[in-house]
Length: 183
Image (cartoon, rainbow, N blue to C red; front, side, top):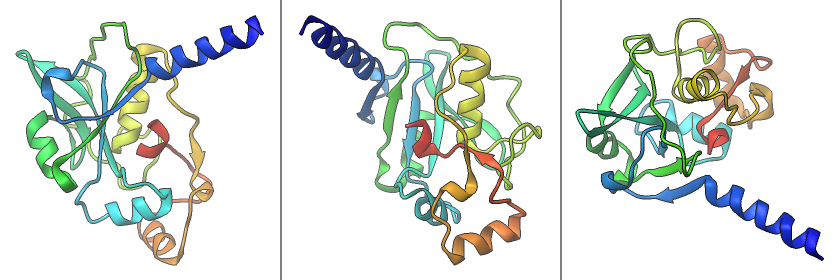
């Protein structure tokens, strides 16, 4: 019985250590928080369809001059003021995940700024898509793998998704991470 109680307490600690909160309150943010939203981009409906998730875009919170910004991969990797980022999403809301509850994090992000957006969703090519950027930062800087990468074919791929993949030369066998995987 004691072993079950200890296991339950450990599981609760892990669950609460990864806070998932729907909030637009900038004062609640900490550097390293991952934020998710439903994007209004042209590709968002296809991402939502394939992943079966409303969350189609994500970024990571960084602070500049004590103000929160979202480091994101959109047309290029850039820092967007948090409130501006929120206002771009559907419903002007976001979902936040805090991976480390009691750890102060400093993200070294300048080397990513200006890198092009990766329309082919490929790893290690000098370009980034949103969830790859977050995944790589956590892996490289915080020695934390947030999720397992999946083959594209593990997602739901109806004909309209496959047609878009063909236009972008995306293979069903390539590995990717989607925003919902990070959540």
